[in-house]
Length: 214
Image (cartoon, rainbow, N blue to C red; front, side):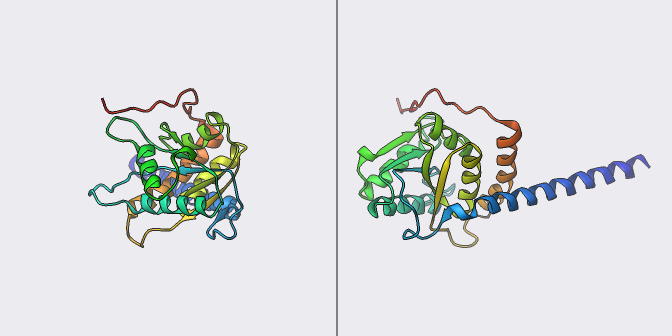
């Protein structure tokens, strides 16, 4: 009898978690859909863009299309006059891994001048990147650049932090390119809801130090 009750409780908890995840995903997308732009022509201009980082290469060592398309989108927006400056926010947790520097190098190769780029070395998570853009770089009105699925979460965080943000959806990757990334994003949205409204994790807003190779 006790075992049956325990199994029933576990199943109910699992069901409740699944419903919570589904509702959070629907809510995040619903709240942000009107602020996410797919067309350069329709995108309002902003002085500053926040480019969210990802690894330059995939785990297999091949070019990461998420990275490639974000950089291409950033270069297009700059050349079309939709943005004037870019903050490159990503993970630099060791001397061997530096997303902001990789983004800068890619954009230099795409013809973007170095003096319009600011590197944020402590964008360890999307939450950190958004908070630091406001608190460290004093920006509360900017364009977020990432893929469509990622933009929804970033916009949700930004709007709930009092930031007037819009986003531009970089070219998406082919279907089936990275199922793990999509599943991770599906789970990250409920975490973002909890972070914004309940957990309030602490983001480093006091420094911006690069971990360089010695």
